[in-house]
Length: 319
Image (cartoon, rainbow, N blue to C red; front, side):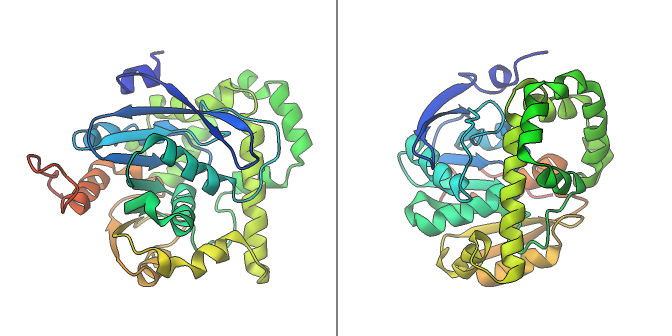
């Protein structure tokens, strides 16, 4: 099958080396398309740059669009060292600083959106416009049974399974299971294609270490949610308590049929951000960027039209 990076970006897949939160050098995979102001796409957990495949071209008409795989995900390096809970925040800041000579526009989905909020709180000059989708800002638990299961499995056992490449041996079964599970995050089954399932699962099946890092992320997240429930200091509460410091113009997009995080969470988030607008995406599940890409793209471009789009170009019309 065709190389997704090569068919999507003019220069294909590129690599950037940053210092991770542990102080170690790590290689980050990224691609870019378009010219102009930098617009950085930040994926969620159990995902990688492919999740933006239906958004890149529309946004690259107006901006220098940058997609990157977070450490441990996709085609980026997967170091064995355990990560600290805030590593994604630290590493997002370092990726953007390395690739963007000016404040970026950040478009982030799910856990990536929570990470983006935390990064901006610690480094306000990182971004001057923010778009977040379906943010786990008020979580009750890990939203999916598979996540909860993987969070409870001893990490050493996951490493053994990963090392034996059992995912590769069971690739057809895994892809069939993921095909069914996609219906949980995409409201319209017509938007679930064979290519979508193939590429969304590609790193987990093909690259050793991906499942281990995924399990580690679920365990870190589950631990932070438990601390939140118990009223103990945690990263999620810290982000909640500093929402008023995010003064950048912010667009909140929320799926009307998100089974993981209810629309009410988006309303609460809007009320706690000083400069935010909330838009509900109709007939849409949690994976909004892929589930309703035309509506998402039009909403983003309409939001950025004031002072962000080049003067000789117009935003896509809203449906």
